Length: 494
Image (cartoon, rainbow, N blue to C red):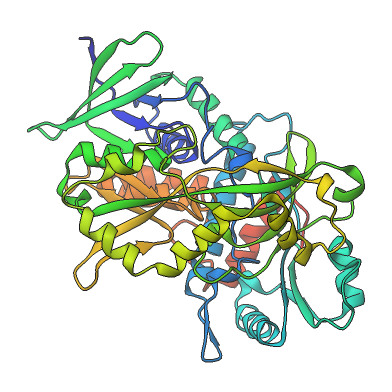
């Protein structure tokens, strides 16, 4: 077998590996990096534009990020995610400013983010949410309205044909965005491919990982076209393989990975490309999630700008598949079961009956039943204008818990080896939108001394001017950073 020894191995050519690789190559220009991707395309799974909503999750409109209980709104998650998205925009602005991003069409466009609710209880919640959020500078531009004339100016498609007696309310943030994460990924991968010491190998699957006594890793890879197997040695491995990360974490056999399981959730969109429809709607409008549904299933009617073309999406409709990847195997889930995670997975299932019921209901729905749900958002919708599209596959984290056996976690989590030689990213939403902050956490966890060094500190601050400071507490800094990224990314000022 051939043996090579790059400094870093990144598994998966999605936005996570692309972001980490760009960080590493900028911080250590002499570093050698190998990127392995089992598909023949870059960013073709969860990072692909049609496999995610492209919302640029910033907590402006996602109601599930602000739980409401006893008249109080918990902003903890919303504040964290909004700050993380501002950090992502700084990094992307750096790519544009330094000509590391070369796209024919912009990868990010401004589009209002809106929350839309009906019914007195939901309106009460939206008012409380708006009041709580606008106390913070990061959300200070959010406006709310119950005025149907005003709302119709904002979202005519959703108001035409609606019962005028229906009580409803809407919040609006003009600084929202639509993001093509696939294009961002391809831009960064192109930069890496053009850099000395970086190798991208498509159609290549990682078969096994072995932690050696000296702390290094032996990574067994296979070229899926030629069938040739190779062992590559490295001091650091990042597993950024989306739904395929869990099986690879199990193969690494690090103690920190024990007790983790995964619950796959698939999805579908209703998509419209009819000009007479899509020109009447220019917003991302989120409603409230159904009881028991996963975060990615929050209903939304979205304007999308992809490759210079405009479309409209509604959904997503959740489903169940035993695949961990859209291009994965039906045996992914059963093969992921091992002695260390069977009980956590069974326990999590018993404690999430509502989710099970929801998924069964969604799987059983016909296109006509899906369409009925769309009509709650868009009353005059016509079935013939919409077609079903398969969305990306997500794997929610199931984690061992001493008290209840296992818990189902919505979000992302980094699992790393004690010596910092391996890091694995598990989970789903908000994922791509917060990829920059997540990869910064990988650097801090695995290379703490390097991150503290003057050279790394200086370089990171060039990429992310607010690094080390709070955009939640420092309103002046937040406004300054937001104005700068808005200008560089050619977005509309609020």
